[in-house]
Length: 88
Picture (cartoon, rainbow, N blue to C red):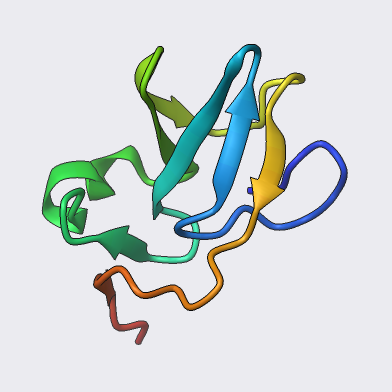
């Protein structure tokens, strides 16, 4: 998935939606990247999109970006553990 400005949504991106600027991308079903807390076994059935966790709004699944969804910052080191599924 891409943000409205054309940039790719990536695991661990910090995002803003409305007045909640603390959202974090916790998995990208599109790229097969999942945080340890949100594994493929829990969310892979969705088949496409991303999951974003917001303190105010909770966990939201997007297949297309909401108009107000904005990238605030990329993860500097992508330090969170993630599992990337193997592609055959």
